[in-house]
Length: 278
Image 1 (cartoon, rainbow, N blue to C red):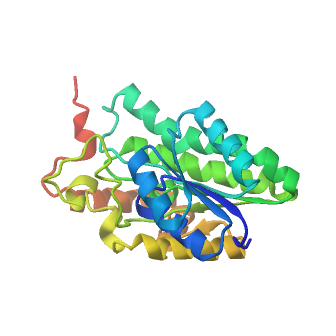
Image 2: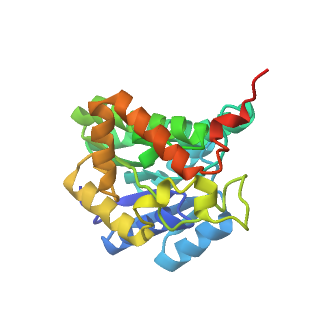
């Protein structure tokens, strides 16, 4: 799909990948871009920069997403591309609280469902529309040190797959973005953020092992994927190899991940050790 003359909505658009996609959409001659973020000031800054509209919305609020879509369609016409991009990361395993896991589930999983429910009716009426969801390489593999991130990003991939299968005949296209490390503020937005820690300290070095990419480069690949209407957006091509190895021999992959974990946590304080024996 070409973005020229399309209305584009980008959640998590106040910074990082979302802001870069918003800029790229304008460069592709999108008719109007709505920049959505929980941080109203951040959304407004990007909107002012690109000549778009800002909206402060909590993507985990179903009614707020419905209102966002309705307001956008009333003001600018049918939405051609909805980028469901908001997210954050935490560092915890089974010891994480139910409330913490549920909140991440709302942001990383339910937000994609809320967006699709809200935007698909008008897209189907048009006979075309595109949903780009941001997941993570963790959604195809796992995230050492973060149970909630692993399971919610896997769910995000599954939602995108389901949409791509179930609504293709109605002219709907879906893609899912699965990067490793990108130079964004996702760690700073974490409730577990320690300003004195490095990204490798926080993530165990998992995401940054294959390089930290610039958001503009990731956005450019997203635009190319949308143009070609292909499903997976893999800014780190190594992820495809890792996923193939996982699919080919799951037991071997699990053994390899256990070895990798021991390298990332050389002091022996492994993520699972937070659960103590009775």
